[in-house]
Amino acid sequence: DGSMPAKCATIIAWSIAFLQVFPQDLLAALIEVAGRGMKTCNDFEVTNVLWACAQFVKQLPSDHAIDHGLDSTNRCSRRCLAVQFVQPLRALFDAVEVHFHGRLHEVKGQILVSALVSIATLSSVEHVSRGNLWKSICDALALKNGELSFNNKTQIGVAGHIMSK
Figure 1 (cartoon, rainbow, N blue to C red):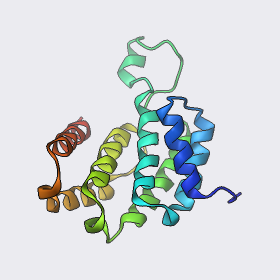
Figure 2 (figure 1 turned 180 degrees about the vertical axis):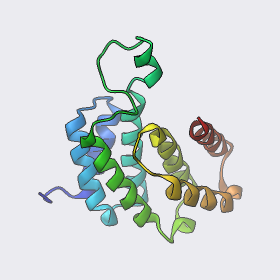
Figure 3 (figure 1 turned 30 degrees about the vertical axis):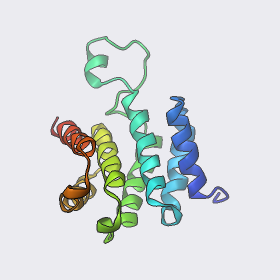
Figure 4 (figure 1 turned 60 degrees about the vertical axis):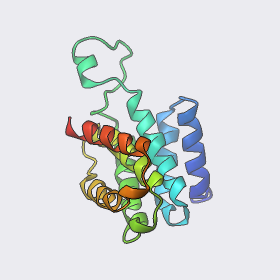
């Protein structure tokens, strides 16, 4: 209803992901709130909500595990997430793209690395386009190569590996 500020939604989303408690309805609602109010968020809050989404997706069983009977929890796989999560995630990606548009060169390298790794993790979700955002962040990180730590560069490599699957 618009009564929760987007910044609060990002904090709550990060908190439930940190605690590894994932009520899908709540997370979907928080993503919607964050997406609608993205323009009021700081860069780290944007990456916090992306990270929360990535943590949710990571805890879901893979399609391989389900197909081969390796997961008996009857949970949906990463690819077949319910519409209640996919739609808000699409809107969130659009809002993130608008948030960073034209100013990626101003964003700290660590923030961009965090966004990149989360986007890579979320790449397994069907029907969520992230190509433009991925490319834009990669281009910005290439310009920031000198300021990135070895750990940052390792994380970029991991993100690239995830995306190549």
